[in-house]
Image (cartoon, each protein chain N blue to C red):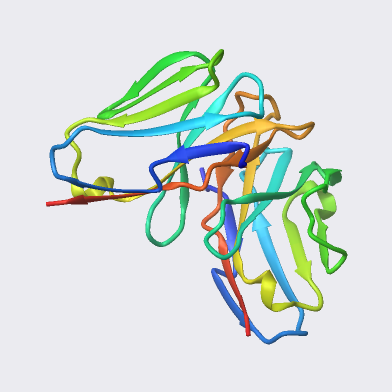
Length: 115
Length: 109
């Protein structure tokens, strides 16, 4: 069974440009999470989808970030326009359920560098 | 103060040593996850604990829900155990994970 995949693995862009990150969850996993780690700090929650619906986007830093999950399969996270402080590693995770004991399976992450 | 605190932040050990990483938390209710992140970045779930103790190979994880504290132990450590170990607690309506800052473990041959 394929795991969670993310594309691209690395992205280097200039301030003001747009970048779109993609996450393909494990097939059948309704729950999809986006997290990010910036500047050596702890990983932080961004948002959560159940199928195609955003359930919680309390961690999204500002309106330059837009996440979608059309059709309830893969998800995209767009940053427009990118700022220097957006640099970091963006992780996607998926899970079958959203109970306290459900395992979240992580993708390899996308390392974003904004110059 | 972080909601999930890990200690130590960095740990260097000699091969064969017994290793303990600690995690205390003030959020969440009834479960805790231990994760491993290798150089190259991928995150792997090691354990999900809701009570007591779990063992997988040379890794042992314990949790005390009342004291909101968990420990990860590695017996007979090996250089391939070198990685960042992260504890995380599910909380919120989405059961999103709140992460500790991680412990960078280096095991020297």
